[in-house]
Image 1 (cartoon, rainbow, N blue to C red):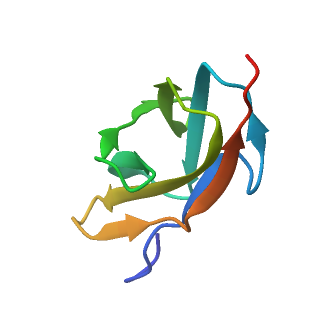
Image 2: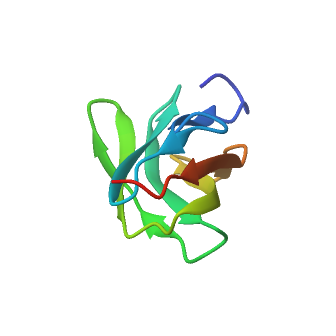
Length: 96
């Protein structure tokens, strides 16, 4: 991260408009810089802490109802500044 530039934060999975199976899904959030922490929010619900592994941030989600959903991600840079990702829309199928 050079100068005052914020790190890039992006929801990698699911892709925009992706259809995922009901039951269990793992969200992946990527960044081009190290962050202190990252969180996700599903359907504008509470923020949930992600775990860090292999250079990404991950959140294991269970119990998603069939239908359309939105995923938001936010993080905190090492200097304390907030970083937000673009909202991602996806669909949970009725099948497992």
